[in-house]
Length: 520
Image (cartoon, rainbow, N blue to C red; front, side, top):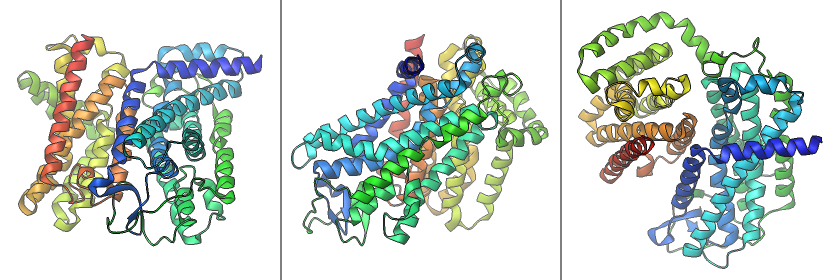
């Protein structure tokens, strides 16, 4: 009976997740990203470049490289994709029913975890199928499905297991159910990537730090080092190579015994947060978590907003001004004021951003801009989902202009907040580097449109937040790739990349408008 119940819970969890629109959005996103990282070698770029020479696109190389890149995305995005189910149970009232059933907490959480892992596993299979299709177009040698499957399991299974375990843990403990928990996991993800530094220091897979390499990146780099005399390695679609150097070939079975042992050890450690979740699970008890807690939890950020609540008085004039401005402009300003009033810490961040950008040397504006964009992205991620989460979507859709103007209003509020955060930097760039100022404007426009589109389609802010944080981290590492320099903080943006982001913003805005018309 226990096994049957566990199977039923897991299957129901997976089915519920697969039926969501956010799954379609996530599936399309991972397919596009997977296709983008495998560039045609004829253009001078390759997935894996070692000492300036590219590695041939054999099944082993494509499987290893694409799985490592996908692990970076799934180890972060997987957490946000499976997060929030328990909060949804609280919001809909299903949590009270679940808490009253005789199902043990451990069995309930295990079913949720298995369903989440299965759901992420299906997305991983979609990535693998995409890479095999790319192999058919650009690859070298035959397609070996079993080699792809085994490599993806070794690298990605520990990553998605750990992400799902953390998601269940953070949803099971009230202090971690809000944005504070989201930020905490982002730092945990960054810490996982830092394992590579310890591996490079030790130069061996024997390091115990490798066991904590749930992403598999350190193991991948060490596996490559076991086959080639590596002085410099580039992994990713933007890696350039020297066509004059002979291509390298990765062995069909690149894994060593130590590498396999470490991946199995990582897989065994990945469910540990799930055990902690069983110990702290609130089981929907009203004295531990309330309906309002599913949206505004007792996270450090919520506590900070509570302490800074008096600062909300600073935005009261904006509400009065919004009532005097005509139509759409007044509505946008009202949404801006509401966002700042609901999150007083954003007022502090906004003032600090403007002051810092005005005083620092122009050569330091890049890191300041990066911090401003990061804070802005986290703030505006839920603007387009705020009405749905509060249960007032039908009411706000009944005002002048309906849901179509509401969508444009929410996009406008996100864009205005973006220019408020980055405006001082853009003005200083306009004097010293006009192209970077244009990149700031185009990037804010595109990101605001994407935040509105993804939030409106998936009805959860975490779809945009996961992709945004992942893209921000990748851009901070690949400082010379123009298309990754969305807002110009690296100084690598070109006229072509600026125009491309303008086009992306227009397409996202039009897509969101079309989706609203379809729903209407």
